[in-house]
Image 1 (cartoon, rainbow, N blue to C red):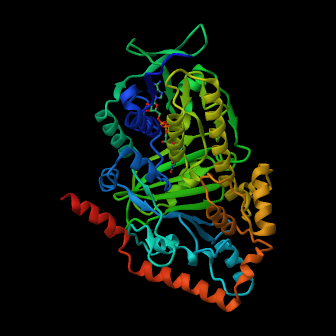
Image 2: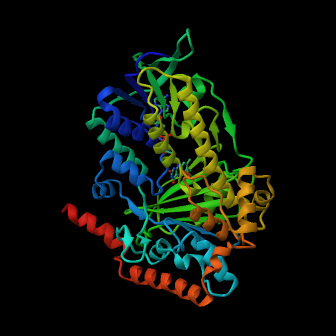
Image 3: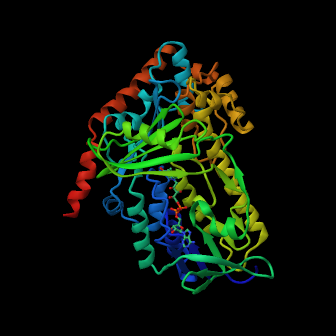
Length: 499
Ligand SMILES: Cc1cc2nc3c(=O)[nH]c(=O)nc-3n(C[C@H](O)[C@H](O)[C@H](O)COP(=O)(O)OP(=O)(O)OC[C@H]3O[C@@H](n4cnc5c(N)ncnc54)[C@H](O)[C@@H]3O)c2cc1C
């Protein structure tokens, strides 16, 4: 494993394979020969259409023009995820991106809000969220900050068509020099010397050799699992949904700039509005619901005519014990899966490729690099895992599935976070964590966790000042949002610019 790394073989042309190809060729392309092998006969998972704001960094790294990207992928804007019926039937809250309110010196806004709650000054937490107010009114424009207020502008991600997105990145990568091979790999040959991967044998008898192999072959994990035997750590005792049924439907209303996540008796339903259609799916636990019941339930709760599907997808939440093993790095579904509740999978592909580029083993693979890569991957996945479990664990729904979720033992890392919030209104986050304190606060409050205390710093202003402070924030947000164009007109303006 001490030879110069020059030839890269990427197995799989789904979202993971093409993100890897695009980033590697863009950033390291001068030094590498990159080949991507995919099989149209196998196809891709075909879902994965909602993203989170760090995707902006991916597009910037690739030098992608946003307007072109939105047009080519039928994309819409996403300002957050609305969770409906998650704590109890009839409830609704949003994990809105961006800030909520504005802090004072060292005192976070949530502490001022908690004090205001006790004294009758505070209104709904999301009254102080610019993203939430814009999302609910279907408005959007791009701006970084609200002048003279110290408040940030809208923070956004996209919904897009997964197939068009993979095609978009494929064109990008091929133009930049990535070689695509269409073919079905039917054997992976290992070195008798050290067990590393030597060649991939295709059905047409051709052989592909490389120095480094990137496994983006989907749930099967053709290289990391089937050839190298790296075990899978199963997390389904914490995240019990193991199935999804997906359909695409016609749009009947203008696209809203947020994802909808609607809890049902044994899981939840997603609605992802694109420019020309809606992506729908129902995530459920097969222990509590059959595929047929789930399909019927989904079809009953779709507004427009069905275009494609229904298609049932089975999965197991968890992670590869080593995402990188010998000369193989697994990405995307091959490396693990957290259900799509917070739209994190595509993001984890992005961070994994970035991590690989930072640690790229130009002069041969070093064990210390593999260990550090695997440690960072594990920490990232566990943080996201805990955030997703929180939605399930803190609920007051009566159905057996939900009762089992609220009674299950949860990871200690999560129970510590919940206790800290309940007892002291505080969040304990590591500095580079994907989900910010504000994200945790929204889901904790939305799932009905009420802190017993707030920080004494919130008492540093009088009640009258506190009331004015709250009122000013709401006034600023309402004024800004009322002047924004509609989300639909933003999307239409991009289409018009092309003509
Ligand atoms: C129900 C569901 C909903 C999801 N929603 C979201 C979401 O909203 N947001 C999000 O970020 N993520 C979401 N995801 C995850 C997201 O879909 C994936 O992370 C993403 O699509 C990447 O998939 P992939 O490229 O790893 O695998 P795949 O799309 O399965 O691609 C695998 C590739 O490997 C190739 N391949 C496999 N075997 C062979 C072989 N023997 N020879 C040659 N080629 C082979 C296939 O042809 C294909 O090109 C969701 C996942 C599921 C299951």
